[in-house]
Amino acid sequence: DQQVKQNSPSLSVQEGRISILNCDYTNSMFDYFLWYKKYPAEGPTFLISISSIKDKNEDGRFTVFLNKSAKHLSLHIVPSQPGDSAVYFCAARNTGGFKTIFGAGTRLFVKA
Amino acid sequence: EADIYQTPRYLVIGTGKKITLECSQTMGHDKMYWYQQDPGMELHLIHYSYGVNSTEKGDLSSESTVSRIRTEHFPLTLESARPSHTSQYLCASSSTGNQPQHFGDGTRLSIL
Image (cartoon, rainbow over all chains, first blue to last red; front, side, top):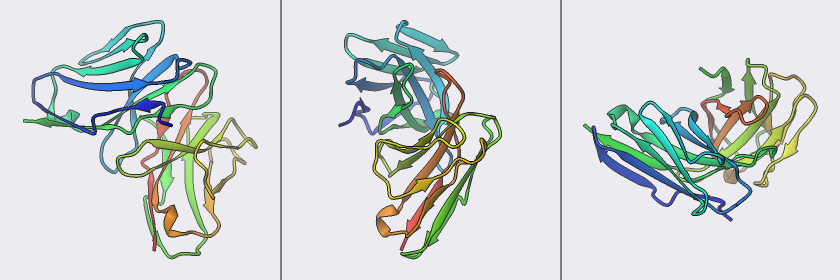
């Protein structure tokens, strides 16, 4: 039972354009959401997060949007750079819970 | 920059061998985790620990065992490796609350 779904295994974007990575979740108890970035042969690194009391959080080129009614979040990268090419994992948890549930990841290719 | 280390990075070994995957962190984090990940799939939690002498099984059933005798050290052991154990194993740690997890670079395990 996949509680966090990333339905696009891969995404290809031209350098300088916007990258939009999507994530859906099923558990309404989730109230904290995170995005991690993973390069080959390295572990995931934390990128940005959002609490369910917000609908947007921005950090430089990265913005995460949360739509609680649709149980959907998205990560926007503007402008995209070749160094952004990596696998992006969406993750969710409920505050006070111990477990973080991860999606299967979306591989982003940014073409120069 | 996260200070969490996993050894070995790669291991190819025959069936029936006993294996210990090492994980150490220097951040003083109470919580530590082991995840198993196959290519293109989600990270599945197999073990976690709240602190010293605390270990719990995760969502994905695993024949491995863990121990937490010291805060900084969270090794994972397979008593008798089988080809079905072939996977990537990621260790992570976190502090309290909603702080994100810091991941090691993983151990890629292949059982022949």
